[in-house]
Length: 367
Ligand SMILES: *Cc1c(COP(=O)(O)O)cnc(C)c1O
Image 1 (tube, rainbow, N blue to C red):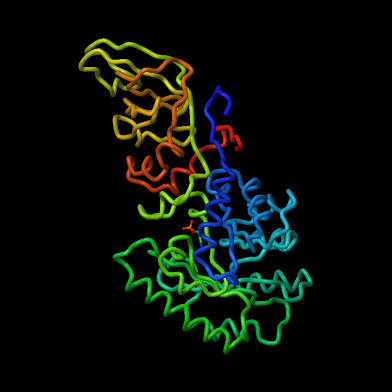
Image 2 (cartoon, rainbow, N blue to C red; image 1 turned 180 degrees about the horizontal axis):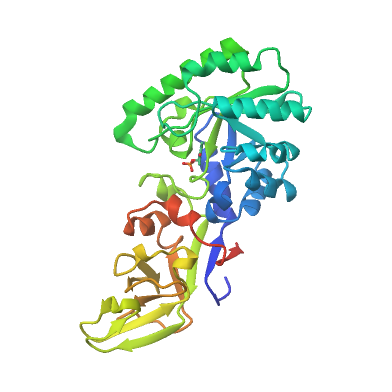
């Protein structure tokens, strides 16, 4: 690696490949694998990730919204792309780019059926989403009859998939609840297939589902966070590799006398002589104020330095007293050296929120 000259989010595609093979090995060879690249590829770069997943021969991709799928199509991604939460206003755009919608309610079904009919579609592939306990999006089991009624005699849509989403697959204390969701999904699959005929792809598991309930893998799994290097599990995490690392450099070093303050609102007060460093990274980059005032630590020369005072928009300050370092030296915020999971925990949040929140101002570099 050449010497850093600014704040970067380093993207390690070798790590992505490692994580993919790790997860793939937990599954039957015939189970399909859907890579989740929503939310800017979990904050990394959706196109670079999608291209690598395509070359690794994953079977499909998923995004949350139509615009995310359109971006990938325009850049030449050919894999099937499931849109998990399409909005009614974008159905024409969705079909224009051969994206597959998740159909999760009577309103969405009616509206998409009509839009596909108007567009002259035949057997347009859709996935029916069922609610088995997350209570977020999805039909209920007893909606199957009216789905069948809506689609009866119509060749406009093809039910390519049926799926549901687990609410607590990472949580060992919720095994009974999760097994209930798996049983519920089994019943729904039976009901749908007896009303509408066989469905090619039944899918339920996210990353923690793959790790904890592989018996429920059906025809395909949907993995996001595991591909990016986090397994929501202290036993699994060391076996995965972080895809993104947030790194920065020291802009300036100050020596602070006793009873001085650092930063806005004078939130940090020095008790003795301290050495502080200012970093070109702030809440506008995705490191929020909740990480300030001694709660989070960064790594410099292999040593931990606390973030002191209030995080500013474009900068933050750390206490480097006793650490042998100089202006221009590299600082690791998270990734290799300190996991995003561990850094996120300082602010009582999770790796997902931290990594998807790194703003577009931070330059993406590739390894
Ligand atoms: C985001 C998402 C996933 C991926 O979950 P991970 O925990 O990141 O593997 C899978 N399915 C649905 C419906 C999602 O919204």
